[in-house]
Image (cartoon, rainbow, N blue to C red):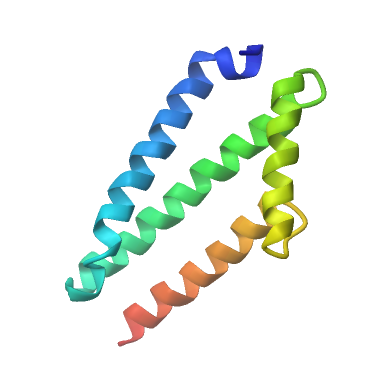
Length: 110
């Protein structure tokens, strides 16, 4: 591992992202049967996950010029983003946030 991935903060952030994702994924299958308040909270938690991912990606981008493993990970993430029609992960996360904002507004308007 490199300095970036050896960082205690990075390791903690990755564990937090993974745990948050697992919790959200478990709830997603049954979210349609939950009351409005719970659905809105779920949307908010999804938005929080995106914020965590955005922060991680920013740190990754800042480390990439000095860390070959971080640079490789950044490139792989960007290639995956491009496969979905985005230039990079920021653009993808922005679109996801926009979609969640619209879903939240729809929930609150009904």
